[in-house]
Image 1 (spheres, rainbow, N blue to C red):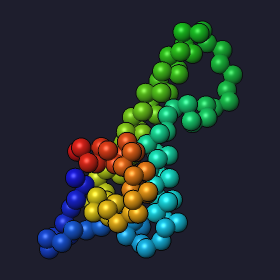
Image 2 (cartoon, rainbow, N blue to C red; image 1 turned 45 degrees about the vertical axis):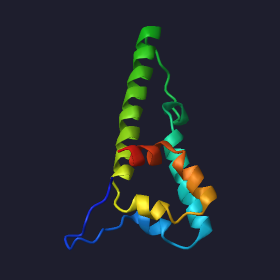
Image 3 (cartoon, rainbow, N blue to C red; image 1 turned 45 degrees about the horizontal axis):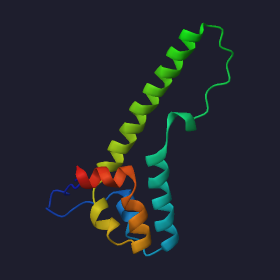
Image 4 (cartoon, rainbow, N blue to C red; image 1 turned 90 degrees about the horizontal axis):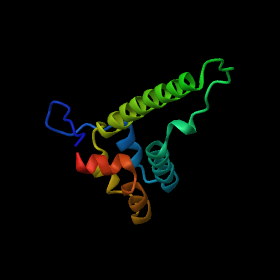
Amino acid sequence: SGQSTDGTGAYSMSWLAHLLQMRNRTVHKNIVDYLERISSLSASDIPAKKVRFSGTESQRSDDIAHRNHFFNEKHQDLIESIKNLPGIVPSLLLLKSEDLERASTTTIVREIILW
């Protein structure tokens, strides 16, 4: 699950895994905050452009649906790229139990584990 080797059989480590392996509780809390925020993002969290819309209500609905679809695709791409970072699962196990519990409830970590 997101693990890769460096060619010698040893596991390579991503930037996220490297940060998780630091012995710094503030860094750990910030990483879990990041995972929670990315996991819970929705299209409504992204401010729409302030443009005057002169089309019909149907066109406006289509525009919103398109924007939501585009956001969902990009959000899933981001989750996939985080899931594929090497060394995350072993590094998560270094978190204190409170941080590990928070991390394990995020969509990203659940998908890594189920992947």
